[in-house]
Length: 489
Image (cartoon, rainbow, N blue to C red; front, side, top):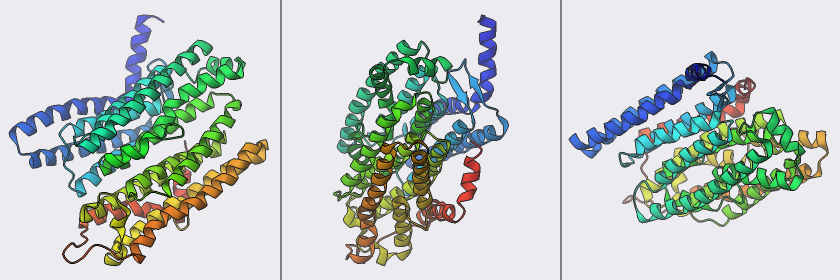
């Protein structure tokens, strides 16, 4: 390819790269704004302007992404390094919403972060955008590392002992998984002769290699995705990081990197032969089981929700195991409902934590349902949705996953899928015991909140909680609204 053609291809690619260019400029702007504001104004005024500026940037970025959904056709960017399609745009919208909710959560709880929090959030969002479009092994690695580096800093953003310890653990596990993934990618390149996972040569050459070589290369490469998904055996970091990081950031971690990683995993597994299905089924089952049974014994709400996110990753992995279009659509539906439910759970936990000061212990919920029935009802709805019971969107999310799995079993008659179906249902029953522990404590345990230490919830906190809980109910009665949109992907 001549230099002129290469330059023309790059310039043409910029048309589909507008949100990323905008965020890159915003990243620089926020760094400059932080330096100027903190030099000439007080911390409170600086925080106010940085919150407002970052929120405006994220809102504009979200608008640009939604414009792409209607005005951009599928196509490769930058010589097949990236692929922009409806799935990539949809997942960009998801991670943008997660970033906006993170800011809103932090604002209503009056969280005060260092000035670098705001440009780092923008940088992470750039990495997440790139992850949703990456179809080249090098680009996949670079985009995951952009997100990872920002996440390490986020964990220790408060610069306290607990956060620093959690951040160090995160870095160690993250560096190890990245090294393993990079080695796996080098093996895949040696086997296939191409870095593009959507190239016909990639799938064809993988299908011809012997089983052991294929499994080693694919499994090592998949380790990086599994780390971001908190899937077994790369889940060990999750409880410690979730317990030590600020709650709004934890809520963001539980959604945004997972969403982008699932899209990469979808594209990657589409290129792999069907013989990889058995290993993925084992990973999914182990992830669900370890997540649920570990959550049973937790007395700290953040650690319990951390193990809960591990289990939910396992349920979404079931959608990948099915190797079907229905399975992929069920993952997307699950991810959307999980976004609202998990952000609501962490918000309501943070509200109780701020009022009682018990630092995440489950006893903070004692009697709060009687003290503030509105708060109690919201939290019960969220827990029911995370369990997967009606009348919440979580019911349809799990129903879609199991329907896709059963349909895949009926088609293939693969016994591993049947066992995955049975143990998946069993694990759903197990999750009842720790999710419904919180509603029980809310209404049937005597609380520590008294007239001298009242439970306070502001109008802004109530409003944000309602905004997050309403879709959980709406998508139960009007699930077709989301399913019709997913059908366009």
